[in-house]
Image (cartoon, rainbow, N blue to C red; front, side, top):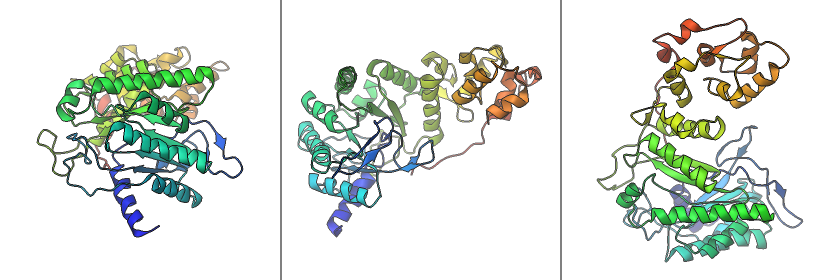
Length: 403
């Protein structure tokens, strides 16, 4: 790789680091045909570990960090004083193929600043994916960040070659978007999400290929005054209306020469973590947005306890729960019990009356669960009534770094 291309890669890989919505899960399993290259396994996430212990990597870059827009929170905004670069279509294709051959990556996550026009930018992204699929027979994972203002026909073309498409919501409210990114149209973003969701659903019904891994989005946390409750309610509406596979919460990171309307420092990264936990409760634990809102204090999720524990502490009258009699939905609300543990408990109690030691063998979270459950030989009435129960179960304070 020559020096010029290396310089571009350094700039445009760094410029892409703020986009968190790069999961590679959900793509159908496939292998390259003769003469092609690449494969997908159906699971994985960019630069992280999958549940089965594999580390799956995506080449995560921008086509360019030049941009016509001047969003206050974006390091690549038009008025930002950063180094700029632009890949050609062939350069991205070459990087992807060569990195794959060297076993550096298993797929591509490609986004871009807006250059010339939304349609021109979208055309360039599509050309990359099309060249990889058709010219090189690439069967690995491709995620394209789509441009909401681009024509519906171009979005249709993108779905033919990408495994997943995504459009960033950016901010949770229309008012915040108007204040911090006045050139973007929140209604247009959500209209594009709706159209994409309809296409994905229709393609599944017709058994044809269109973004088989679905669509996702990203919301910036802490750039405006939105509460966690409003973020969660917005997320619930997006999941319900547009069938999103995933919503990513990205803690705002201060940028050079930032506008005075932006915060001077990042929110605690633990806040981002709590939002993911609350999102998980709605998606897998049958919590409603109102349930999650009931775990907040003045609209904000606690940093010292997770949302599930916060909800349990505020609903002590519903505990303790009998592991031998309670329905699955209520067991899922016991702190420390995950979905797998609950399913194991439900299966095991069909054959025997469970004691506390039995529960301990079925979950690694018994320490947190003990105050909230009853077993054949155990009743924690005194623990549940303790005024210091929250302090006993709270996590020690910590601040993670963004990168």
